[in-house]
Length: 279
Image 1 (cartoon, rainbow, N blue to C red):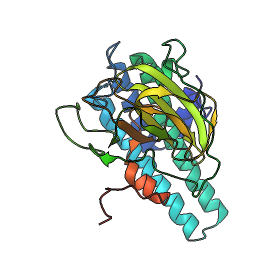
Image 2 (cartoon, rainbow, N blue to C red; image 1 turned 60 degrees about the horizontal axis):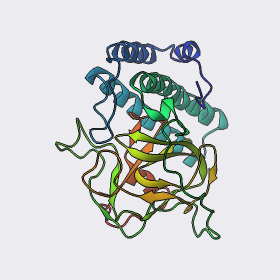
Image 3 (spheres, one colour; image 1 turned 180 degrees about the vertical axis):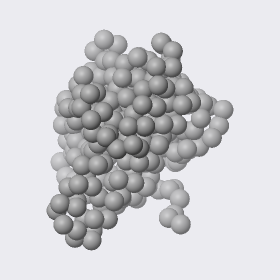
């Protein structure tokens, strides 16, 4: 299946032996069965690709994962025992494994290119020259582009989305360099759907970042990238009203597992110009 947590569906069910986990898994399976063949995300109304039941249950799993991740962070900061930390991390990974399996299956069912053709070879994506890593890195994390202004934010409402916006849009001119926000491995380089030309990178902390609507892709699936390395050029591919970079942070490579991107970048000590101040 190409899933990096190496969990098969039966093993994942075994991980959810508690009543809450078993109920979540069963509800997700029922919701997935209700998704009609060919239903897909278009990247513009990018969170309306599944039934409402599936979307809500996936959102609950995302929130459960983030609560589990916060618990792991608190335990580490309080110098808790290794056993406590390992147990909390095991629970976090179990939630992610269940969410991963279901979103992968749904992506295959709906034709999400990240699940079907992650290398972009079948769709003949517009690959440019392979980019070289930056010679120097002042910080291990960085913003995804330069000379931007923030447009549609995470969870924004509007007629352009079926429910809410799942990422942060950086308004830039077409052809503006787009950078990997941190070191990692390129998980997907795809094109042809509503996200247009996109790159998905897996980072060392287990999260994924997505860079969509590119005019050109300068990396390849499986390649290593570093913070500040150019991965492509911004554009207006897919379903857009103008050039911009759509940036997402996800728990898995697949649509449906997004988390708020600006707080995630803030935890990496990345200052995004124009981002709202912390309450």
